[in-house]
Length: 121
Image 1 (cartoon, rainbow, N blue to C red):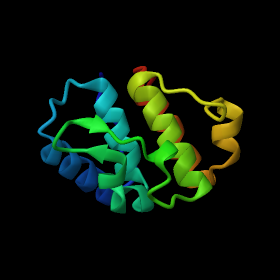
Image 2: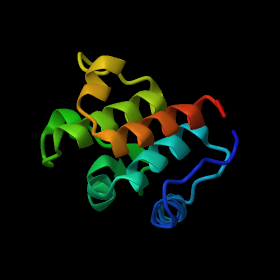
Image 3: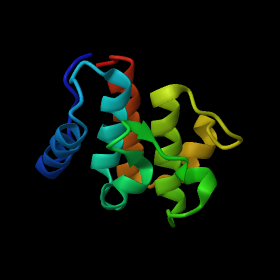
């Protein structure tokens, strides 16, 4: 996996914080992409503990539990992150459904995450 392209210095710092918090190997492509998406969106970063369990090193079922309130754009980024992490699918994980709900900065974040996951540079 090539080094990701960060949208800002804040994005990079938040990403590195998540990596440290999880004690993740930089070689873990799936988790790296999930953390890349979470760290690139301020709302997701604030709610990262509702998305990912750092003690068990696994995702939370936050999309089906409904315990945390996410905007439609944040939900789309979570769906994309889960899909790139473990192949998660539901009725709204198609590119059309995901990108329709994203504003321009989050579309750039989403495309960068896809490029990162599949080493498209």
